[in-house]
Image (cartoon, rainbow, N blue to C red; front, top):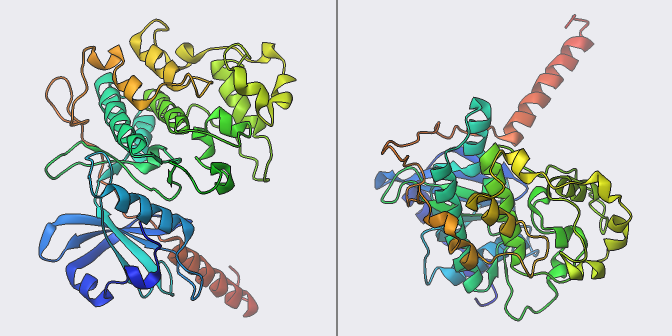
Length: 385
């Protein structure tokens, strides 16, 4: 993709407004806000519109937006069913706030794995194996496609994995949010120059130990973490992140070691070359024991446990590729995965609660400020609150 400038991406806002009608806010974060919208000429055709944080004059396009546009434009020539489709990019006069900002239009998915997992956790109901298998199978197919096209996602987690519930292909997994994605064929600079990648609970051990160079295997580790989370309905490695730059993520590493055991040099020969190896070498081995099967309540000798351990292999050189994982015997065992992840073995469909409108943090903050000002005003007047 050629260098992108704002003028290259501008489509008249009036034209876009005539085509789409915003329904409600469905998510927000450091990047901006995401809205559900529909086409005015077809109210049953939904899209997701991501309004990026405002672009300051002379500052150019935010790096995460540039990455996302670059990657999705790169693969749009050969669309894949398990990757979100970027339909349009335009300049919104208001962006996510009151200043101009980029807006990206995607195909819409009714659910994300984060909310599906949360539903199972609240209901204390384990997800059926067929659904887990179907989700992981489709996720691996999407990641295989990315890796074959020299793209690392670098932020796979439940919230970035969507699932459709309508249209021509209900129950289809779609990988989203490419703000940290990177083309890794002949990079112009070290991958480590991009800083921290992957949300900490899903970050591979080589990254946690300060690897200056890493491979697409970091995505496979993240899939292993998501896999385990689908089984127990909570993140398996919930460490506390140290925000200080170039700091060892000791708590996260210990959370991993207490489930998988502390890695040995025999298991992972290259670990001795990583920046923080000496620090973990001093930790007593007796504090860490392998207990993954017991924690997940699965058979240690099962195909499920075997494929999961290959995804959560410490040594990135030995960790499965997406292609190897898809060829594992677990996926050919009954019940086999299905294209519709919601289809149960008895022919019925899982139904999950519809996504509710998200609360606008900015509006909520203004409301709290107004309430606080009202209280102050009453206090000044001597009124009891």
